[in-house]
Image (cartoon, rainbow, N blue to C red; front, side, top):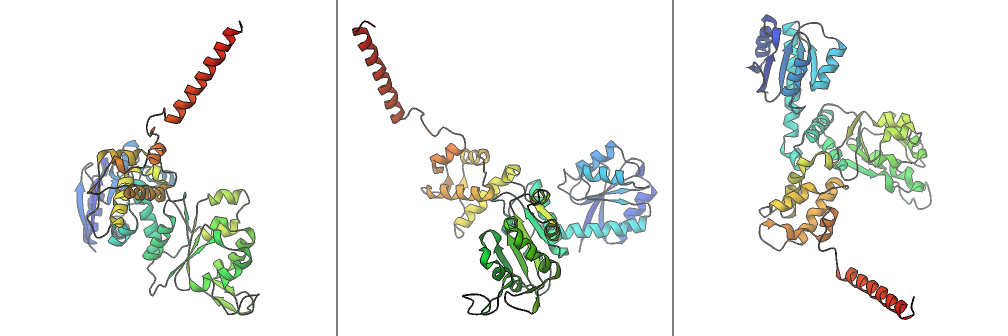
Length: 415
């Protein structure tokens, strides 16, 4: 793999040690470009001797506010506090680089990993599945891609309704690098009937209960060799949380009505729209189960925190609505409306808004203001038309007429 990186030496670090690190990187197959200050793009390395505010500013600028991978290399002793400051400033990793050859090997390993992660999230498959170029979204995708492709850790996806938790679960399964990987099995925990929960999860033997006319595999057996996605896992009642502990820990279970232990090798991905740790602290979710689920916690940001992704998402929805035709375009007022509107239902609501606009589209290649339904304008805070409608005007006239009549009657009685 062709690994490219820039190296930026700051202050007194521009000496023999930093030059030796650059030479060793080149010997290790890294295409190095030297930068004296700023102008950086892509993954790179900042070398320095002592940390100060200027070094943190350099790291912050070079990482483009965490949009790029930046490794901070200290040429002298490295303390835990120094590492924390650099990570807070935007460094993706921090190393002590006082021995050039060892430092170059450590840097190369990280550059290679970052290059591979960037390749994964830039692939057609990922871009087709998940759309977004915002900083928050790209950071989330990088984390998910790295965990999915290089580990078998269980993943807990948290986020508001409509943020795309199931799509991220599908991405974890798609990027999982297991050979001969089998299917993704989805089980919605909010729809499980308590009386049939054991059968849903573990399966049952014939005759295990009334109506069990044949044996049946449950979700854990079906997920053998693949991925088990438990959606809305925060909805699990306490007795089911207890039943899942052993099978998640040991990957072994018994069918309802059976005596034989069965094994299942699966990757576990869970999703919830709740703050599951807060539920643990309140005693509403088992802590021991939480720690089995949360090998890696991915929190999806709501659409209001990634507004720069709204128009790219709209264009994707328009492409999907008519895949065999050139996608429709948006005029400026419609773009302004879509960017201004609130989306409590997040990406799912945005897709519904686009669908309603398409229902009103009269033809041509342009979506215009007339395509926006009146009730959607109201949702955006627009008045939707003249406030003084016919019914309101009639009620006011009737009230005024009644008041005038009462006044005249009073005058006639001498009141």
